[in-house]
Amino acid sequence: MTTYSALTHVQGREAAEALAEACEGLEPEPVGTGVFEIEDGSNRWEVGAYFTESPDEIALALLAAAYGANPFAISEVPDVDWVAHVKRELTPVRAGRFYVHGSHDADTIPEGVEALCIEAAMAFGTGHHNTTKGCLEALDRLATQGFQPHRIVDIGCGTAVLAMAAARLWPVTVLASDIDAVAVDTAAANVIANGLDGRVVCIEAAGFGHQMLEDNAPYDLVLANILKQPLIDLAPQMATMVAPGGRIILSGILTTQAEEVVAVYQDAGFALDRRDDLAEWSALTLQRRK
Image (cartoon, rainbow, N blue to C red; front, side):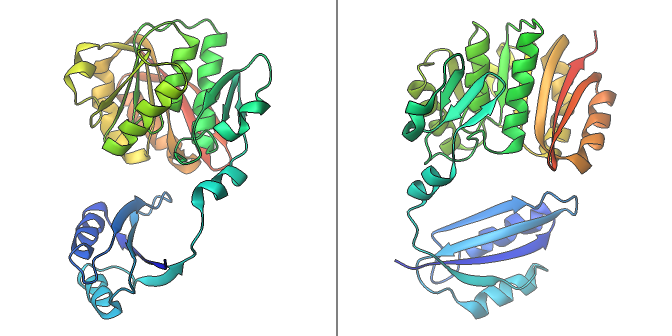
């Protein structure tokens, strides 16, 4: 079956979301749409629509013009077995004491590591992206330093790889939330697959917007590997949800964005403990001032 993609760039999140919604009314109807921020500080967003029939190029051109977007680039998507492709490409990753692997690489686990299995079909948050690797290394470092958190939450958990790593380090129940219901289901499946059922609790929520998250505050450790703007938006909540002396590990930000994020969190009452740059990405460890 041939699949077609139609991609464009537009300025601003609201325009991007409105354009994606408008695409859903096209004939033939797309089987899916997506909106993604282009992380270069330009506030440009990519809008994608995917079709199983050749899309109406004239209708797409009119929508692009109406929303001030670039012309859509339309192309055929190769018929690829993506799970098999990911299994070939995603080799195990070592990050501190952690060894992140797919079930197809279960026989490669070395001795003396904390192994976390993330299936290839659940490729977001596998540990291969430098933001996730940086967060895992920051967790490993905190544990090595003797840090002992009692209340931990992973905001925007994706596959829950960070929440599961924290549960392996400390004998506490870790909360893991994500705004995406599919991500929450994925996270819950990974938790069970890694023998951590009951140790990591997965919740659908935007930020800290859930009664369970509010009831368990204040937190000694918050993990948030998301994007620059959501991190900035979360800063006021972090100030009230993190205990004095508590740590936060933030990532999903470019090295060029790190100083801005640090400044916002310093204004919110946090001090920078450490910044780690991995290629073009940064992972930040901060401490709430007492």
